[in-house]
Image (cartoon, rainbow, N blue to C red; front, top):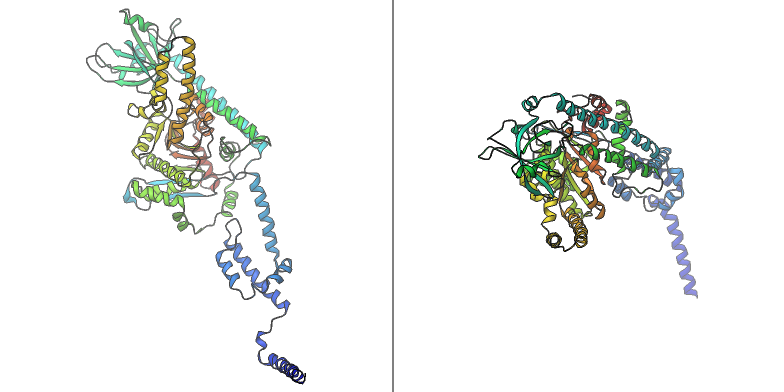
Length: 630
């Protein structure tokens, strides 16, 4: 006990000495008071918040530098509980205002679909000696303020009504012009103008993909007037030399699918028709079998554009209902807002446009290295190096891949069609790398069949699995084996059913085989479309009834639409492919070239001769303060 008492006394003395000595010699390790901790934390938080405000990119996230400062701060671990207890006291008023503003932005974002980035980038060629592209410009567009659902429905009604009236005016003007010409001009005057050829012989020339082919020949060698008719022209075939508008005549409408030169049998035209002219059989029996052809026009484009306008209005009505399902296989709401809203909503003033864009896009954003390192940049770089693209083409391709809506501009000879085909290749690679749903198809199209065939030839050169959709007889002969009709007929199951149809013993059996054949063709066609890299069609051909049926049955849709020579297309024609589930649009062309051909003067004044590309570019430049003209 004595020893224990001495030990406890010694411990007490030692503790007393330590308590006496420690404050005088080691006062620098004593913890600071709580008020000092709070002051230092408040200062540090202000510094960090200032850095957040300076470095956030829309999400308000703290930069890596700020995070490292927090982790290295000597009070960051020991003062965590104190900071939590006095958060409201230490948080500046500016931080609270920023949180409130961020919450409002998030709520607004949930109400409206996101549009394309608010930027307008002009890409200029850095090395003019490379030659191919003198200028490529990428324009990304969005509305100043997305319209509400009810407002969008009202604007869509206004849009549909406006362009519906313009289409009626145009069709009426075309019909009146042709009928008046056929009634008032003589046959000689029509031939001199290259609008008519008479004295032709005719005979059936078989069928091509289900369409009847009529062969028309000149009696003696080459007829110079026959050379004024081109593949793709719509014509009226009439028996005799009388005008097709003469009472009692029964002209047959058709389209020229092939033209041959002079020879021992004379020049010839192959015309696809829906039915054989009755006089053809009379001519084959040695009767008076002379025919004439007159240039005409097709009402099919007008019909499909009107169907597209009706579908646009229906989509707007469905989106206006709270229970309507968005996305899916309908055209994206963002595209609808861009097309309809930009037509009905007046352009924003340059000042407000600059304020809205400048507030969201830094003047000197450090994104150059980021763009090269991201997936779109890597794909664009790989395709450019492989295909020999110049820098401006590579940058235009990269920007178009990144944006939901983009316009690639360039004057003639700058390689826009090559850029379009390389862009398609890049999008195919992106789809393969991401493992995107195979139901999302890529459609490349143009206004005319000739431009569409030129685009397809570029895609075939790039070794892409390409399928041409539309009227097979309107496609260049060298590409017909790649049409959807030709590929379907090559399938073994379809060929077997064709044989069963020929061998059918009764009409009932034949009807059953035809129904089975139609179902098999639809299934095979849908699988061909699903496995293709790129679907190619003219704007009007994209609205083919058989194609729409396959897309609906197989639950496919055109997710991305690339339109070459977009400046040559009237605006309603672009709705035909877009209303089949488009979520991304790329317009390629030059709005300074000749506008679309429109016959009606009143329709031209109403804006039908102004392409969507030209309208969007002019609007963007007006909002940017640069004016609508170059």
